Image (cartoon, rainbow, N blue to C red; front, side, top):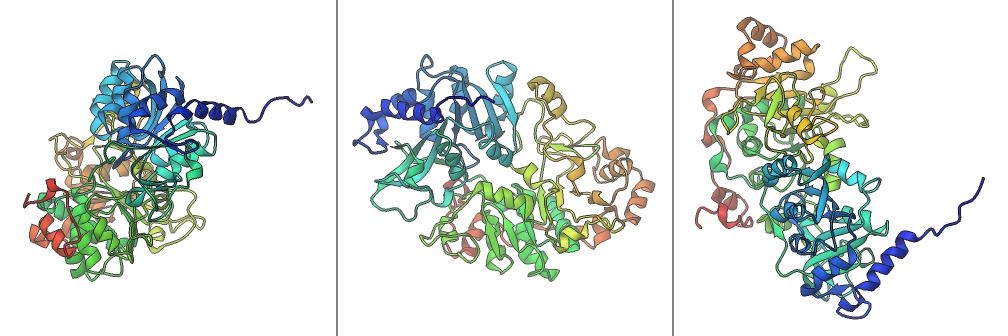
Length: 551
C-alpha cells in the first residue's frame, strides 16, 4: 500500500487566502466587520463561481439584505452558483437565476414564489437538485451539500462578532455550523452592533464576516389566522377532530399545521373541549410556531409547553411573559430552533394534523400541483410514522395492531381538508398533479408530501376516515370515497358501502361520534376576532397592523 502525500488543510488554506483578499474592507485590522456599502465587493471576492451557497430564507426570517446584495454581484465574476435554501420566499431568490448568478437549487418550500419556480423551470432558467423536507436538507448540509458560503441573519452582534438571534433563532445555528466547521465562509447581516448582547446564540469563532444591514431583516407573520375568517364548516370539522381523534386516542403531544382548520381547533379547546371535560387529558405538549389563536387555550390552562420552530411577529411580549409555557431565555426572549422542533415533531409527538391541496384515491397527498411547485417544508417530517421511535404513549399504542405480538405503536398522521378547496376544485382526485410535475421537472421521485401508508386519518366536513383500521387498499379507497363528498371520488361511494364502513368503525359521520351539526356555530369559538385575542393576552399580544381591526 502506498501512503498518499498531500496537504490535509487545502480547504482551510483556500479559505484563509480568500479572507486575506478582503482585509482592505475590514473596518478595523483583525475585526470581523465590513462596511454596509462594501458588501457587494466583499461577496465578489469571497464567492467563487459554481460554489454551494446556503442563503437563509426560511418561512419567516429572511437574510434580505444579503440576498439583495447577492443579486448585485457581477455575473462575470460570480456565476452558476448552486443555491441551497429552506424556502424560496423573495423575488431576488429567483432573480439571481435570471441573471446567471445562480444555476441550480436544492430547497424545501417555495410558497409565494411557487408559480414562478414552476414557470422558470419550464423555461429552463433554473435546475432543481431536489425538493427536500427541512430535516433532510439540514442533514445533507453535513454530508454532500456542505456549503462553501453561508449567508445568514441575526438581530445583533457585539464588537467581537458574537451573535444574538433572539426570538427568531430558527435555522441559523444549523446553517452556520455546517459551514464553519468544514472551512466554509460565514457571512452575517445584523440589525445592530452593540457593546453587550442579551445572550450569545452563536459564538464569534464561527463567524467570518459581519455587516450591518441597511434595514432590519424581513420577518413575516405567517402563522397568524384572524378568527373572524373561520367558517362554521371548519368549526364542525374541528369538533369532529377533537371528539373523534383527540379524545378517542388521548392525544397529548402534537403539532398543528398552518391553516383555519387547525386554528378552529385551537379556539375550540377552551369551549367545546371544556364541555367534554378534556382539559388536562389532551393537547398538553406542543411543537408549534407561536400561533396567536393558541392564546385562549394557554390562558385557560390547557397548555403545558410549546417548543417553536420560529417566532411570530407580535407575539414577542406575550411569549416573554409566559416562560412556563415557551422556551424563554433569562434575557426574556424565546429560543426557537427549526431543526430541533422538526426532530421533536418527527419522534416525540403523538400526532401531526395538517392540510393539503390534493389527496388521491389511495390516500397520498401533495401540495405540488399543476403550475405550482411549492414543495412541502416540514410536513413530511411531521407527517410520517418514524421507524426509529421506541417510547410509548397512550395515543401511539392506541393504533397498535393488537393481533401481532411484535407490533409497535403508531403515530397519528391526520389530513384535515374540505372536499373542495378555495379554488373550487376537488381536493380528492384520481391522480395527483405531482405525477405530471415530476415529469416536467425531471425529478427522480414524485413530489408526494405525505404517503398513503403514513396517513392514519382523514377529516372532512362529511366525517372521519380511520384509515389505520383498513385491511386492504380497496377498503382504504372505499373509506376515502365515503368522506370525499360530491367530488368524483366521493360519488363512487354508495349507502350500503358507507353503512358497512360505519358499522366497523372505519368511517364515522358526525352523528356517529355524538357531534351535533347544529352546534357548529361561530359563538363556540373562544375568540371571534383579533381584538379578542389581544384581550385574552391582557394586551401583551401586538398584532401586525394588517390584522388590527382598529387600524
